Length: 101
Length: 265
Image (cartoon, rainbow over all chains, first blue to last red; front, top):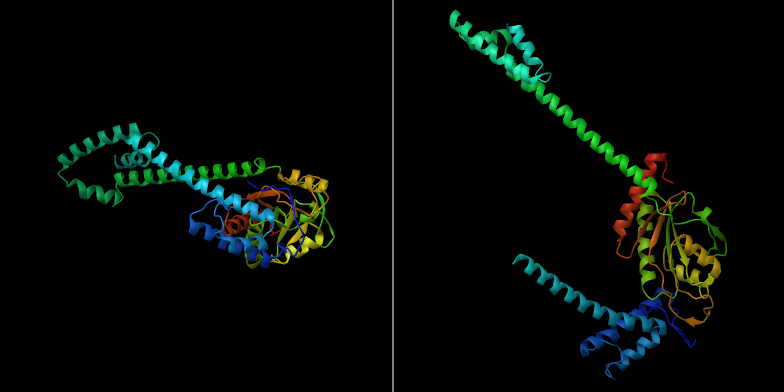
């Protein structure tokens, strides 16, 4: 997973993510941005063009770069996982059907 | 003849085949004699032995013996299971934990000796952790609150930083404010962190030369450990363990401890 990044941060009025309050703010703006992506049917953040720029701006303001990369990657991974889980399920059902017949 | 009959009936379990043979013979004899004497057979037998007929006695004794054997068997089974459990607890213990030297978020030294006399919940994480660490620490806070309610303050929540480059003591102190008030935040140099992670079988990805101003995440094992009041490993709880599960497991362990040692810690 994208745990591991090497981007140094610029220390300009960054949120203090060691506090619950700022973490909450980051998560909320992330959820708002992702909701916008969902509405547009976009999985991978960045593929939406300028459609969610207001949400994206807030997201980038409230979260650290490393967090954004992590959340974005996780969103994509989660989608892939959903697909492969669905595939595994259909395969399993098919195998069951075959066993019965 | 009657006395012979009841004697035979009262030891059916000693030699069943012989007994059956005797009884068969005797019933035959009995029948012929009753015909000769013209007495109603049933009433005469009842007068001799009451309602406690040989047949009833046999059934009674056989049932008793059967039940006795059955319960003995069940008891043995339970004892066997208990013995096995005790053995597996003795030998199946994972080699997690050991000596370490770190400092608390208040700058006090803290070693494995400071685990003694408390039930310790130990979590490894870092303060710049996006979501998993705060979730786990919230879970730990709830667990400790519940244990406090049930047993008093015998649990000690511990956070060990796996990010020595950035997690200064003041930073950890600020971070911990949002969680349980008794939560102790431990940190050390890179080597000390590496050593404690090794004894606790925790993987972490922070490089040795990480910059204190770097914006990076640390990949690390997500477990919190339950250590007993002698500092021995009891259990590792993963992300999927719920507060209820952790409390239940810990309470069981405390109960067992109390049963064995007569005290909770």
